[in-house]
Image 1 (cartoon, one colour):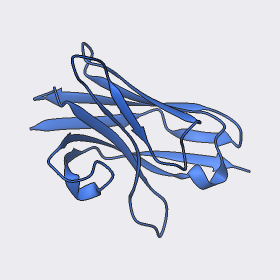
Image 2 (cartoon, one colour; image 1 turned 90 degrees about the horizontal axis):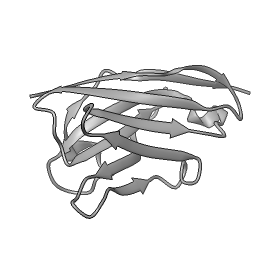
Image 3 (cartoon, rainbow, N blue to C red; image 1 turned 120 degrees about the horizontal axis):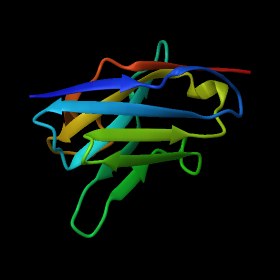
Length: 125
């Protein structure tokens, strides 16, 4: 089992920045870690993912956040981060941390085994 706890959400003005954190506990090491988000009335969507390898981390981003967001991880601290810059009102959503990709595309919600409870990000215009 893996437990995930997100933090770092909040209210920010458009153009601002936030850094979301995800603390993992339990069976902590997952080569794949990810971030998803869900806006009111919409389905949960992929934001970013990171996979560890001996040759270095590989990162994936949704087109909607590419160039504005950076996913990173600290395996020693069992933490995953999502730095978001140049935030837009359309980034408003609950952001979820995900761990342990089970198969299929990393961009699919059903490809992930563990989820956190989410942290709210609200971007005002």
